[in-house]
Each structure stands twice: as C-alpha cells, then as structure tokens.
Image (cartoon, rainbow, N blue to C red; front, side):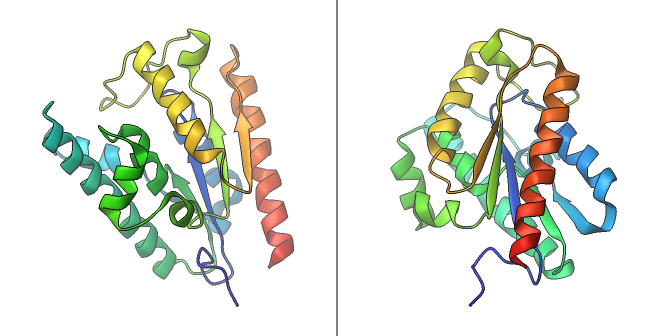
Length: 202
C-alpha cells in the first residue's frame, strides 16, 4: 500500500529551516538541475504576504495568519500532486513550520488543525533543514521582501523549527557556513542524495 505522501511515482521532500537559510535558492537551483523530474511548491507565506494579506500584532490575528498559511500550503501541495503525479514535490516549507510561528505552544497549533505533529511529519518523505545564517551571526538579507525577522528572531525560529523537524525519520541538516556557495553546494548534494534514496524505493 502506498504511503500517504506518495504522489503517483513521486515523493514529497520539504526544505525547511529558519529565515535566511538558503532553502528557496537551493530549491530553484535543484529544479534547474533536474528539470521535469521535480516540481517546486512555493512558500505559502510569501505568496500570501506579497499578495497583500494583512499582518497585525494581536494574538488572534497572528493565529488567523498561520491558519491561512497552512491551508494554502496544503492546497498548493495537493494541486501540484494532482497535476504532476509522477514528479518529486520539492516543498519550500511544510505544514509543520506553522507550529514554530504560532503564538502559543505547538500542540495548540496542531489541535487547531485537527491534526498532530506526527501526522504532519508523515506528509513528507524527507526533510532537509537549512540552518539560518542568523545562528552564525551572519545577515539574513536576501531577495524576499516579505521577511520581517531580525537576527535574534530568525535564530530563535531556527531553533524552534529544528525541535519540530528533528522528529522526522529522514531528516538531513545543512549547517550554516560563512561561505554561502559551500552551504548551497552541500545542500544540493543532500537533496540529490535523498532523491536517489527515494528513487530506489519506487
């Protein structure tokens, strides 16, 4: 019986980590390398905020934002899965990430979704964690105009995300490196290795 994350003959890999980790760059580069074998699922939060979705600081608004993000994330994945059943889905963040951004304990986030950490982890066949540059004190400025976190916030989010994703059965960490080129090279090799492992299971 197929696992719930299977998409035809394809698999679902999530790229995650704190802000400024290089995951979006890695996803784009890997898509260029593999072409039709891979389809990238874009980051839901970036799509929402770049489209004008409001951000407010009160508790209920923050919760509403995270509910909207995870709903969009799931539907983006489902659309790509339906349209490209035999491709590997490379997801720029996953549904688990919302628990780190939720203004309350992670369990409350999953309860709100009517789900659990274990169920959301099981959506993905593998997780590749790109550690934020903030953990090394490096800047996280980049090409994403919707990013609002400072270095301390980015480092904290990185730690919270790590605590969640470390529970995944197939997780690889791409550590911070003062050389972004070396980090991305390591990350691409990690993605390539995971893809090779998953293909052997097909």
